Amino acid sequence: MKPLKIAALGFAAVLAVASLALAFGVPAGFLTTRVQDQIESRTGYRLRIDGATKLAFRPSPTVTLERISLLDGSGSASATGFAAESVRVSLSLASLLSGRPGITEVAIVKPVLRAPLLRQRESRAGGAAAPHRDEGAAATPAFTVDRLVIEDGTVVMSNARDRVEMRIDRIGLTASLTADEGRLEAHAYAGDQPVRLQASARSPVAGFEGSNVPVDFSFEAPGLLEGALTGASDVRFAGSILRINGITGKIGDSKLNGWASLDFSSKLLVKGDFDVQRLELMAAPPTGSTASGPGGRAQSPASQPWSTQQVRLAGLNYMDADVQFSAAELRVGTFRFAPIAVQITLADGLLRAALSRSGLYGGQVEGTASVDVSGGAPMHAFRIDLKDARALQLLSDVAGFEALDGRLQAKFDVRASGESEREVMSSLSGSVDARIQDGQILGINVPKMIRTLTARTLMGWQESRTESTDLSDFSASFRLEDGRATTSNLRLLGPLVRVNGSGTIDLAAKTLQFKLDPKLVASLEGQGGAADPLGFGVPVNVEGSWSDPRIYPDVAGILSDPDGAYAKLNALGQGLFGKGQGGGLDALMQGLGTILGPRNEGRDDRRPPADAKPSDRPDANGSVGDFLRDLFRR
Image 1 (cartoon, rainbow, N blue to C red):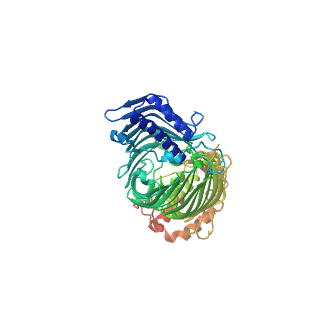
Image 2: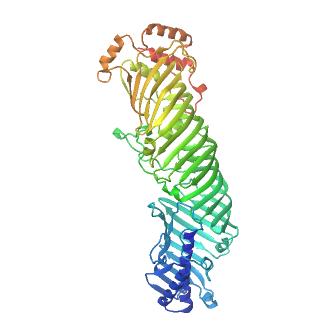
């Protein structure tokens, strides 16, 4: 509350000078000096006027003060201060004759209010003594003000020790202060974010102290909120605490209710409880989202590097909070929670969010997420338990990976540090256990890939929008260290297919290196026991970028002399299915021959929609029959 009191003090000092000058008609310079002395003796602050003082009586008594500032007792600018390019005060002539000046308008041009950012809450006891102020006298001046206008104002909040500064610029404000219905209209920029506030009170603004005042309001932040926040509440100042009770309103078309309080006594403390039907927070697109590849083609999200743009979080050190929030639906950029219930606490630079009874991408999620900025570089931690979420949407939004769909269950216990996406992904450590069931590998025909691998190395995933492979179960446990995720138990099960593997994913570079052991089995049950597995003669290596890896059998010299390596492989009798492949093939074909009907050449090969259920996909005579024909045809 101190910065507001300093601003009010400077405002009162200017009004005192103007009122006395107009009331008594004395030379402005003489009066200014006397008022400066009075203000300094009573408050410890000194009013300085570096420009001219102009008096006019038409059309109404008006005084204009140029280049004013409010300084501490040493006569120098302090962390808390007030300055303005000019102040124009207009008075009612009738009020001057009555002995109680009535100011019709105060217009302040380019004011600058400086306020300190505090890392710790201050106690009234102990500490350095502040200059003596008669706050009661400043709070109840012997004059009234009808209208206040601020043009191109600025609020600068800073902490010199931490070299942190935050600003609110281009402030424009018009307020009616003594009318039966007080009104306020304001607009400003917080960084690059424009904001606009309109409020009307059912009593004069001067009546806010100590009593509940009904207020109607409208708040807009077009770069942050989808739609305006409108509503009504009871507002009351109680000392240094602003209480906003009984909030009812809407954000766009969604209903909102709750309450809030703001304590300005030292370090800002915010408390509140809000419930909203639907809230959409807009997020800026990541840096590089429009990057193009060779030939001007747009790159996929998985092929683009992580953003290096820093997100400044140091401001979390200068506010404390305890807020509960719930919503039937919350969208943050592409992320969708439905519903969500979260308890948010912020104290001493540690922000913690605890999720409960929340839904994410069609599944259930609970856990905690925290950011600690008290020690400099932000430290992030996540402990999340996710059940039955849609893998396609989640992996696409998180990592730009659009090749897997199904029911995802995962447990995350990870930590990281940094201020940008790349810094965070490069420092990840912890563990991740993930499992996807009853889904698909999208855009990839696994049988065709296996057949092609018998003759040549593959570059990329051989993607096609019209093809996919059913997936019964996919699971892996990863250990994370310095942005690298390592697993030794990757396991994939599908109709006729089993894959075991191990390897590493470099999350920062978006590359992978895996060794896989694919097998065919004479069973249509994806999660059933493997009968007479037919293994690939040698393991398969997958390495390179997420979006365009190199896939080849693990044979010595295959990359330097692929033709010779494949010839050697076939000469050794390993082939596609290892030694004795003829018997294995015969057994497999005999076991499955009963389900292979005539090939339907006219069927639709297009990929099922992302939300299709397993029962909606092609039947065995289509998918399994085509699987085997693709696999074994010459």
